[in-house]
Length: 75
Image (tube, rainbow, N blue to C red):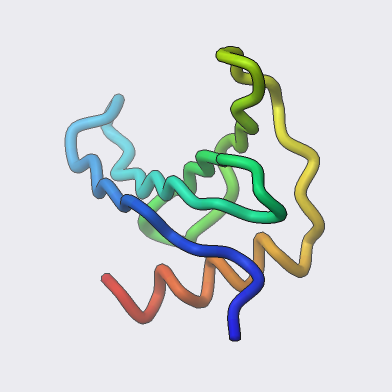
């Protein structure tokens, strides 16, 4: 079983000449959003949402890699 739950995935084909994939997910009862470049799935940014604000997220490489693999299967 995955330690996170994806709630939304957006593939943005028109973002500053770079195609990007943004995934919203829940992990350890927190809501996150993470964006990758579509071509090589390089991490662009990651945010955690708490108390109505967004802050840069500090996610482990393991979680990032699990999400990256999940995206590969979906696109």
